[in-house]
Length: 382
Image (cartoon, rainbow, N blue to C red; front, side):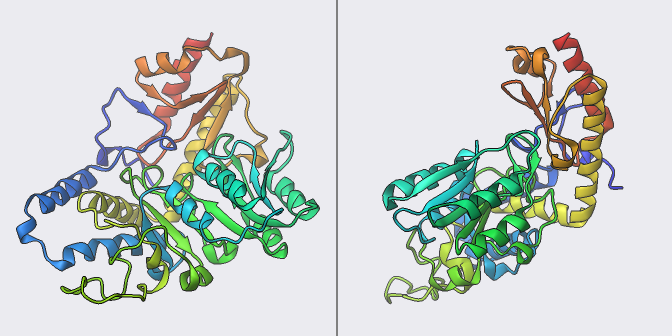
């Protein structure tokens, strides 16, 4: 099994950081890469046209490798919400149709659909479930039992707030049968869970780098399937996503053709000389470790979390429904209003929302971190 990689991160010995689903630290080498990138902008007289393309394409290729697609299939965007907005600007939504999403879906995957429904005269239906029910079963039932045509299904493989698994392959099949579009948010799992887009075939899948990909804030990627690569309309219009945009006289001709594949959706100023090197270095490290090895490490750490949670009398979702890389522990009557603050004072970092404690380790954690966290929680909630 992959060992703890804490030595590659600048995490102080007295810090117990188990909150990657909020924000990851970045590796030391990625910090150095970012510093080198800043220096590129500090000396613009040394820049060439390659400065605008080389790292862009390396980052694109690395991002594509984490979801099993080709570089041409991926666009560079600034945030998950931007990727969802691109999808919302393209997928067909007829008046009177239904957009489906899970209850308490992440806001970056929620508000765009509420706005689109308002614009199109459609309706957002929020799918609910009981604790013993599976999200996929409820979504599939909502698709098949809907009296109105279903136009869009907002999908993912894990409920970000509950830490519960979603069988997205089954949901995708029902979505296709209904003639609807599947749009996915991968921010809470790309980099932690091996994934093959060809098995699911969504219309769009977007994911940010600042969580399980161990990368920078303000950078994300967007997968678009072949249909949207041919006919999709971007949110922005500039020369960097146009064929011929690299020409010295790009400003003279009108370049109507987009670059191949999903590049038509690339954001303006995509060549961020400081941000891209950080993402590239972090993704290269993840590649070196191997997706399966990282996943197995996270499965192991999350099994340790549940062993400790049950030992201390805490509960959570049914075992069969738990995601393998995110643990959401129910504190119940032992929840305290000041728990989050007091944990930070003890330099233990998790996410507390209501009576739920979301614990999300990564490769820099080990079993000792988990034991220490539960010792602190036990002392603070007695």
